[in-house]
Amino acid sequence: MNFQKRVKQVVYIFCPLIFASLIFSSCGSKDNTSKMGGTSLENLYQSWHTLASLKPENIDYLTALQLSQEIVRMYGDEGINKFFKVLETPEEPPSAKMLAVMCLTPFVKPEWKNRLLQLTKPEIDVNTRVCALTLLDIIPTDEITEYLKSLLNDPEPRVQFVVLTALAKRNQPE
Image (cartoon, rainbow, N blue to C red; front, side, top):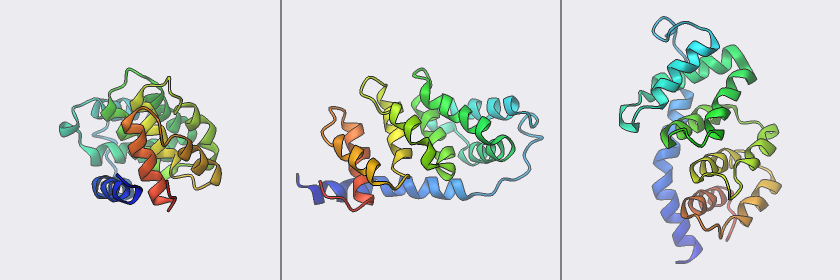
């Protein structure tokens, strides 16, 4: 299958997911702290993690994203590190990792590059790799584009899918 056909397939499949994450991440935070168990970092994070650990069809994504916005607004980098911990922990369910990506997306900074690159190594579990690559794609540097190109022939199809999607968004040929 040629590059253009693969890109079209990737875009048609992945666009609704991207659109949904953008909608969720742009939702304003409402004052749900009384329903969320208080405002300490641990209470907010435990509320978020409880939601993130559910089966995907049972997750209240809006509440989870509101919690994440509250965590980052109130605790900054300390809160962001909680979501990175989810990505870095192999035992976390894939749904929790993807929700962590959705939560981190609006806050991605170029300074995260090295931390995210460490999570894309072949010996890391595939769910973590895919999540880290999804976040890396948000950082628009030539260095990351070249790194993504180096993963085009990764043996893991899910990694290839994310890489192709990222390169398509960057208008990069195969």
